[in-house]
Length: 279
Image (cartoon, rainbow, N blue to C red; front, side, top):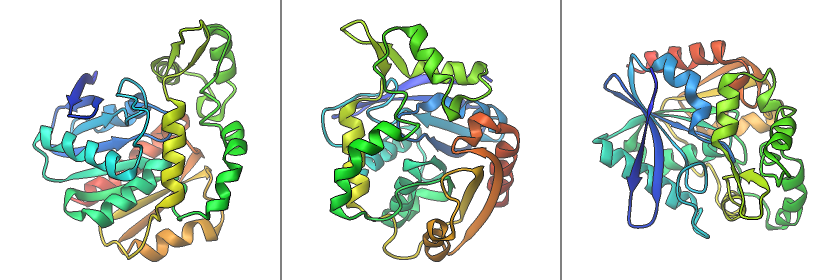
């Protein structure tokens, strides 16, 4: 099934989203930093017969608005709840990746009534981080693979050549090419770069620095997906989730930080099984 792209307009922003509207059970898919809704193409198609699925471009990403400020968790959650209200959803299952894994954990403790379950795909930045770490952000910006898509690149051809070398685009296929093409644009000076903005990058990093993911335990059903070659490889990284997610299922899958792009078959089956168990 080909998803339909639609737009939510609020007083502050426009949120572009993909919708697979074939069934009734609400399912919200949240991409990670510098990605866009198309990363969920395989999972959306796989689950379309059983769920009403919506995958937004988060503010600052893709086709959604790119304000110069306000990339707080509060604003991101408000965007998502406004989208759910438009759809007539009281609550939804949420699948989140990377940075939005922290968003899902915060949302689950702030407004648990809106969430039927949360799936955290290789989440990052779950702690409130010491302020001095902000000094290391320029280094992180230069080495994190999901930010290497930002550019600038002299041409489209150069961008594609360099993007193909990144771990999230290994085994370059049609879905990965669509994700890349949906996330890049030509800039006014003629160079090419990501639609994800510097303001969004800086605002999101400020938010993850300031706000802890967990304060008290959360009892919403939760699935933690740990890819073999993901970022969560040590017990100290995983322990906060085991401690604070009371109703936790833990699954390992093949692939790297983007298993839905690099090893989608087992990833899709893992998510489908967990969601089916929540019915």
